[in-house]
Length: 276
Length: 355
Image (tube, rainbow over all chains, first blue to last red; front, top):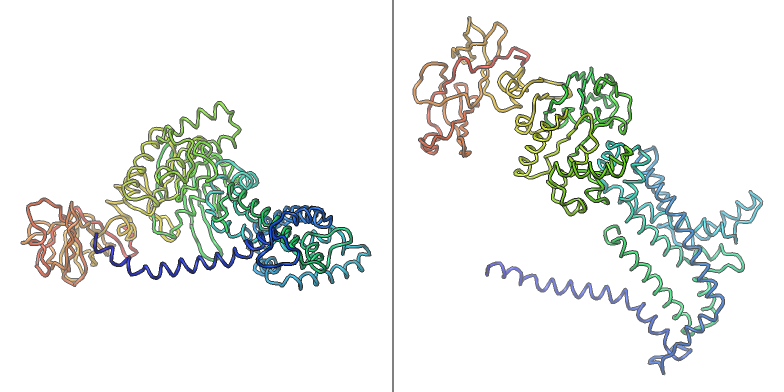
């Protein structure tokens, strides 16, 4: 027994180094969040450190600002619709890519993942130009319509679903679906009752990521929104052009809180760490 | 239950032939195992019977009905997979229930049959557990219950024991055999483990390179192998090359004269099982071959002795452990001994390796 204690000692230094490193990583990731929330309670309208006092008035200010409230509701609707449609398409795409090894599947896969590789602003402008051309061709409005915006956001969400669902499908034992068919289920029933439920964690995670990606998107939305329909990130940006008070921090805090709650609730039903 | 007929079954994947011309009649209530090394076509054949693979040619009859064109879900076979293949998001009871639901069995009748099936494999008390909460052996028992609950015409098992550890393997094997006998299940059992196949089968089909080598009762296959492959795959065998030199007389290429009961003009090789051979100090009646001990391995119930024959060919002998001789003293490396065996224990093969 004694002999086995000795080698453990030797690793103590490495273990401490790892702990410090992990702590630093967490600190760097969480510090901005903590500061944003802290700042949102500062009394001074021009950021000043240390603050002369604390107040909740910035939250009231944000709540009274019509463009924030409208932007929030609009972003929420946009993100839900885009995530729902994007996940449905992404699941079908992942199934097709994994199940049927067709010619060019590799290229389709790369194409579906490409929105991840492209800087948002480039994608935004590219989609804008594409829409303009299509408008000329079809002789109807696309830029500034809800349909055009949703379509662009769907493109952003698809890569997440394709990646998560195809990774999950790779891990499935094909004999499980075979067992279902052997027990009397036709292909359709086996898919709905056996395969799809097994993919549930991946699909839920994909929906969550899609929602977040769409909700916080600024660059792509920027060139596509129409008058009167502004997303929350755009509303924030517009406010920042003329103001620098902690209202923005208050808005951001609400957003952080909301996404945090969604994550926690999701994690209760599906262990996200198992899929992502 | 029903009988199964495989009629000139063939499967080709591109240029490679996975199964060539497999014909077999499996009687009602019979357990037939498909035995062979990996890639011999045994699993492909099983999957053709289940309907997962379409045969290139040939027909499959279950209970006299041609099912060759029927999709998997209409064939009414109960299959057990190597990696259990339980539905992970369903409890044990729900797993067993699935096949019954597919058959539109009423809820009341379903409960009765779930109970019955789980009772058969002694898993009733686990019926509300999820597969991940069960051990490998328990999972495989549930898989068996699930396959049998639908009262299939044929019970198909694809290497069902190979993921279990040695002790459990024996236990589940005996359980499968007992169930099969009690319910009179027509069963096809695929395995690469010869001991498993010998222990469980009414008949076994030994396969190699997509071809059936020999079909028969385990003892017949072991005692009267029809070719080299069967002789060597099922247990071990010592071979002597040579020619027939008269009635019951065989002369090896080393010039030794052997008495072999079964010898004919076409005999080119004679074989004898290692456990039918005795190692003695001086030649006695029967066949005697001078050998030198190369090495020996003490395996508990017997000692496995590796010997060099007159032509330095490798021979082997299994000496039962009678505790009267210490293996370390009796089989020291380099010791000269005589390998002795009876004329009636020899198996003969012709040029092609066929018996």
